Length: 255
Image 1 (tube, rainbow, N blue to C red):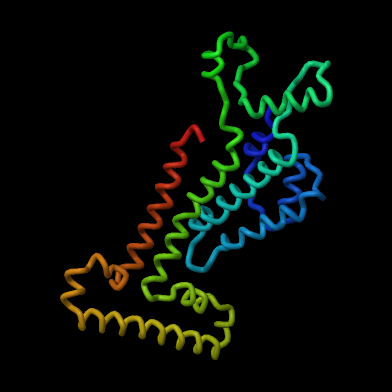
Image 2 (cartoon, helix red, strand yellow):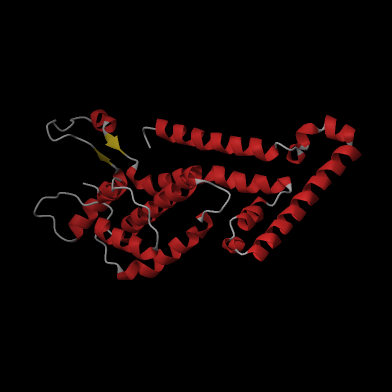
């Protein structure tokens, strides 16, 4: 019986703060909390780059924020259990005591295990056992990290590419969603800043298009970021990447 697999199969949750994750960890793994508290807090602190921004919607956040955070936290919990506790607990004969039990469990962990239903007979030969071999559980945390990166990668591409258009989308959304807009003077100041920025971007694009018409025509594939529909097509492409990622991971039954 692998307790590490029980952690993976736990009900889905979205950890909102460190204390909530500590309580979940205590229930799932049964590990004493105090020795790992500071280490776990440091690991969770490194996930600040996943914080959502104003340039996305609930579907994007469900994909790159909530799912990625859940997968990474689960990978950390499993890693702490694997490398800081007893990753596998075997049902052993009564005469196995102390170091015998530790050696047997470590041997089983290193040499893999094989699955046999209770109603079936144990396989006799080596080939029959290899067909039932379960050899992936040592790599579970790494698989979870890879899955988390795949869920986050479309958002990473979006944040890298949209900034190259010259339009400071993050600042535009921050101004547009500023709570101080309820005050007339703050709203006027934000609108003035947005209009000045957009006017500057459009003037630059107009001068580039009229000043270098031949370059703009022949090297069009190199100047996609200066086209009006650059952000539109980039947004659609990122949405398609989200969809492809979900379909790809759902099709991987062996993960």
